[in-house]
Image (cartoon, rainbow, N blue to C red):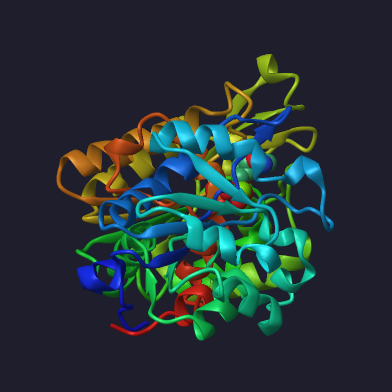
Amino acid sequence: MSRKRTLRDLPAAALDGKRALVRVDFNVPLKDGRVTDDTRIRAALPTINYLREKGARVILLSHLGRPRGVEPAFSLKHIVRDLERLLGAPVEVIPDPATGVAATRRLPRGGVALVENTRFWPGEEANDPAFAALLAALGDFYVNDAFGSAHRAHASTEAVAHLLKPAVAGFLMERELEYLGDALDKPQRPFVAVLGGAKISGKIDVIQALVPKVDEILVGGGIANTFFLAIGFSVGGSLVEPEKKDRARALIAKAGAKLILPRGAVVAPSLERAAERREVPSDRIPPDCAIFDIDQATRLDFRARILQAKTLVWNGPMGVFETPPFDAGTRAIAEAMVAAGERGAVTIVGGGDSAAAVAGFEDKFTHVSTGGGASLEFLEGKPLPGVMALEDA
Ligand code: ADP
Ligand code: MG
């Protein structure tokens, strides 16, 4: 993908006093109307604050959740107080883009407004040019900083970028594209990918795209189970997708020695009966048990391989990490990645659950992607519509 024009490329005169229409990803988790994790809001601050310092008037666009039409539970009003606290400035809400132009013109230099949840209007997900034109009228130029939404061609991520120029990438978007892009296009070798997570159907395209690029791909988590089935091992009551068996077998043949499967597993009769867990080799999964984590031998094997790498990309937990003690394998991989980073490797984590698994020590990685689905599609080599629509540098 060609390099995109970024906020940094715009001269001061293009910002001062101008209305910056900024697509951010404020799709934060809410509980009882309160933000339970403000990571995504904080991730947008460098772009917002830069624009404010340059004298721009900042008009923010985001979706929140999956409302069906106007649903107050999904109102962005729920996040205004957190946003104001993080910015240290008041935020004006624009309840309807169709009637919002006057409010954007009234904003002072450095002022911030937030347009209501773009998904309240059907034109958003339809990528409707008429709705995009309403959005475009709210700004003098467009900034997309919503990497997490860039894999969707929606009015606020795609159509609007064709109507409002300059259309550039914000700092978060720039960072995501730079780290993920460099890792894929010019990795320091050895380049090792670690893939895990629940379902192989969501990851098999990623594995297929990564195989020619990486030196090794370490597979754990639920997705390893379908590979086991493809080899002829039985997996008991484990999560598995038999319909993907043939593709898994083809991938094993194609990847050859690059594809590393777990040597053994932590199994138990059920998640609730964790006290009965034990470690077994991968070809000895008991019929009345399910795989919930990688075993100690695999942790050591994967750790040794990770420590030899110079570029690491990790997506997907190694086990049911939400339910200790089945988080141990995932934690071991996280620790190995941190240790590799301390030895100079570039370490990149992508994926929603993977990011959650390293929450609190993100700073020990080179980059933790904020985009779950978007980072996966990027790794698959798919063009991201929200990025494609931006101007080339
Ligand atoms: P990410 O969001 O990082 O891309 P996924 O959504 O693909 O990751 O996978 C995360 C889920 O995978 C977690 O909920 C975890 O419990 C589940 N998982 C991992 N290993 C297993 C396993 N062996 N059996 C069942 N579920 C698993
Ligand atoms: Mg997930």
